[in-house]
Image (spheres, rainbow, N blue to C red):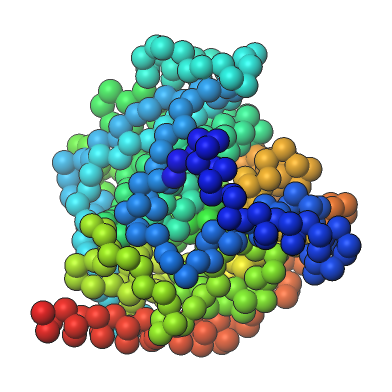
Length: 482
């Protein structure tokens, strides 16, 4: 997407009637969200919503390419680009695929088995005593890393997975967030450039995430970093990155329970310990998008509503989509939609037993229900859970409305959790609901908070999964006729 002033103006001109209508309605109190939002918030959300809720979808390849533009590095951040090589051994693939098969309880489990590939990533840290427009110094990547380490501690080390529905965005788009998280936690961030769907569907991203985690624990030859103990590593991410954080945790929990938590990696036999914690922002935990809040919280969000397959506007074909063989979903085959490593919402309460502390921060958004269910299940399983919800706020609002009081509070809570668990400090289960505008805090009992009941969760997820399975089967029949 062209972010030049001229391009932005051309995009906004057709939205002038919407902007005027929204401004008037908000000013006279006729908007249903006027009591919760200021005018800037309402305009921002409604304009974004108008772009995303379109009857004329953008080709996937065009949307993906536009989301991958590198804005460059400037201001108060150190960024050191690195490559994490794939091991010669095939163990990481074997343990992943076996875990996927072990955890599949829905019968059919069809997925492509990706190769292990080198993963690129960005070490990110806070850069002090420079202006907001200070350019990135023209020095080598190892020198940038050395400077980063002079200004930032190695504890905690945050393994970060960016959001973008598994097919959009990049570590480059998330540098403002990862540098802020590094600063607030007092540590550093390794932001992973995992493979994107639809070209690389499930479980390619999870394989890349596992390789990145192992590379932190057991650095390959010539790595810039020293070995990082699991006790100081936090998995973190927003939206789809939150999904990937929970999927990686779920994989490790299963491997440890099943006695398969050792493998060969770059010539040595290594273990697969659990991290110090998992810290997520608006995590996307249900790829079926089947929970009630997808509809009931629509007024507070900008994400597109879930539309039945029969009513969906067709996505224009491109070199990335439709896939071969056909898939109903960009991220995975339809039969896998309710697999716990695809949709962590599908995992029962006992699945999370033994997990490290978990952190959720989110708005009263369309993904609220899935977050509530997973948090409540984990708390019931004896896991320490910190829950911070903001009334009437949309998906990833802390990133969208940077600099606002709500955004600052969101990042402060996120960074505080990472700092605490990464340094081995005690964390207790706590739930907080913050009121709109005032940020007045109300206590929430996490283990008993309002959430969709388990039987209804299973029914709704299966209903959508079956709908997608039928759609995928129809696509395959049509291809077979060609």
